[in-house]
Image (cartoon, rainbow, N blue to C red; front, side, top):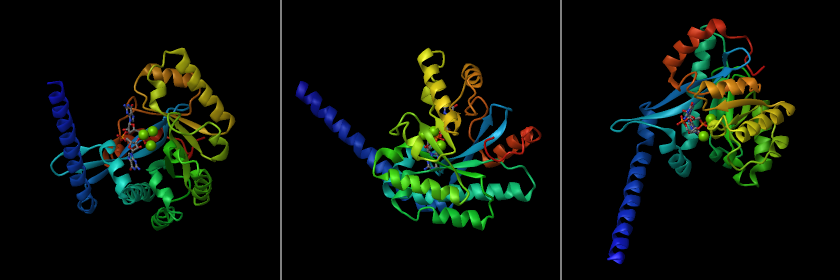
Length: 289
Ligand code: C2E
Ligand code: MG
Ligand code: MG
Ligand code: MG
């Protein structure tokens, strides 16, 4: 009987895996059509500068509007597209939408703030990966300093990439992009890498803020902020939802906060309204000051 249970467990497990694979294949086969039909939508979430409570920047986050399944979140498709390589095209698509949006703000005389775009580590397999981004930046006449590229720590999983990434970051800067390290502190990077990498900001992962009243958590956050400040790197706290978290971060001089407490990621037109309603509160600085 026990054996029979195991066998049925096993076939259940197998069919679950098979179903998952079939679903993933279906999703992958929709990619080209979805790009053509504009079924990928760029959402924008603001980052608030804690020194003056103004919009200090924003992040572009992609959502997929599936014809039958409705909205699909990045965690359900980014890993697939990292495996089959479609992520390169998808990141460029998101990047272009951000260029279009910034261009629109420039043309209508609105104040600009830096918008960041997530860049998968897959790009780094190609030495010329930055070329299409530079071409789009030129095509839309985007000034320097208003687009930031976010890299996750997972790019350092492979130590051999360190030299490559170091050069890539320097190259980003020379073409007028800012660069930040996403999900900082939970992945593979060591603090020492901050010496090698000339990044403008680190984004502390929201895990650090989950138990904000815990004194160990507090000391870790304080130490990260202190270290970053000594290295002249800005700190963005991610996933901030509560006033306890916000008040603590203010009290320890964190630079910026991103999280539901201010706004969820919004579709471009809604974000535009949100930003406009705060515009008279915005300062002139494009980058973190
Ligand atoms: P990320 O870059 O670290 O983005 C932050 C994630 O936290 C986003 O999830 C955002 O919606 C979510 N978030 C923001 N504020 C809060 C909060 O207060 N509470 C909670 N619980 N969550 C919050 P999302 O949009 O589902 O994206 C997940 C991840 O997928 C991103 O993490 C990023 O790594 C990746 N991703 C999203 N868009 C793109 C893209 O265009 N290209 C690439 N390569 N990756 C992307
Ligand atoms: Mg990010
Ligand atoms: Mg993050
Ligand atoms: Mg993440």
